[in-house]
Length: 208
Image (cartoon, rainbow, N blue to C red; front, side):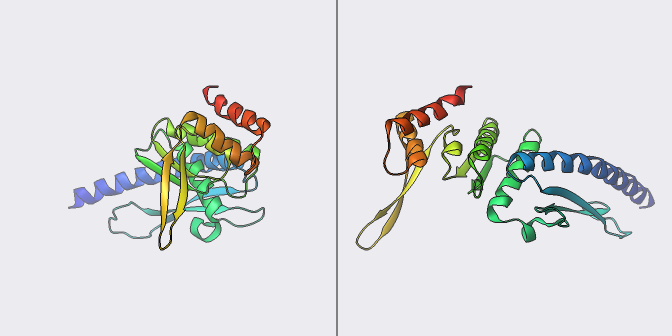
């Protein structure tokens, strides 16, 4: 028993050192990625809190908590207490981009990841989502044409309202239908030759 306890202390201490070493690097990388996603004043922090327990614990000598500050001068707080839905999606996207080559999560789902961002940032979001989609399945709900244009596959969701029922329909768009839908997202109900040309250009940039 003494030998096992000694071995645990050695391994848990090594784990603590690795956590401290990589937490600083992770904080820096995710904070930088958040800046590119339209959150320039935000700060990501990994907090390691010693448990203070002498007995062996399944997760080592400390608890790990992710915190974020989304405004200048604001102390970092737990993600679920600070971030809005859109911010949380973008923070999650930033984390997944950094960890893309170290995770085996088969499917990532982002809901309204583009809430509250402009066209330039939406372009970055779309590019990063497509980058993640190269190595795994990414499903994204979006109303931004800059994001939709970057997709490998575009699914159009609509409602069919009957006399007594309302059904949802999902349709896989063809390349031409995708261009038309991106144009609609760009220009509203009335499409012009200019918006169609713009949409075609946005979709064509996928190969660049």
